[in-house]
Image 1 (cartoon, rainbow, N blue to C red):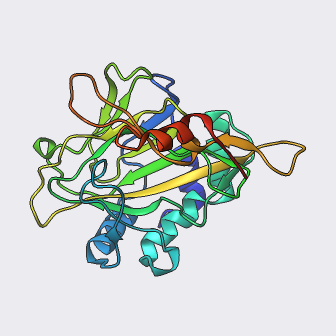
Image 2 (cartoon, rainbow, N blue to C red):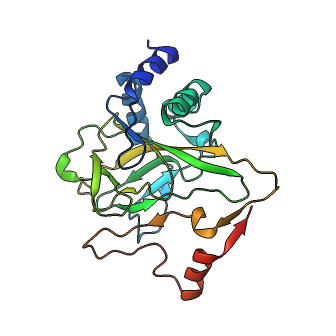
Length: 260
């Protein structure tokens, strides 16, 4: 049986970071096959995901953030990804310091989307309320055996100006994407997936934070940094962040700040 130490040594070789369009790593065959297959099987049997998100931007999505209710193997994977040894690899590869795991799984955990589902292109929220921690990294690990290319569902990494797709990765079993999060880390699977009714696009999503320095007990941040910022693709009729909001709400997101 493969030990965690052996997995760590293997992943250190596999994680190769590219900066185009933003710092990221795309890895195939990320974890040992026996582990990933058990995780997929447990996810398929799991019945405690709940509808999540705004259907305007992420249709048919279900998720679970409750670590304690999750299946055994999926908890084991989360434990591994949030271990001190793995955090050190992330810090080294992405040139970060003092990276912290988010054991509350805020916005993360087990995600699945069904036929017709999509996740529009966006950059992620960067701060949680009442916290001085900034979100710095995402890991997405896919759990989908026999995923067909014509079903769609590839995660797309877009350039900062939303002109074109730079990278595209099918959500096949044991594919993983790790990337830095900031205001230009534009990503999503924006077109409806066409998988069978009895199949879902499954992933484990984990987020990492770094504590910001400062002598004051609070920080001022624009309100939009507490939300996903949805982006519009060229030549597509789709909403951008906040454009359906009232004028006063859009003004608040643009100019007003939150103390935390």
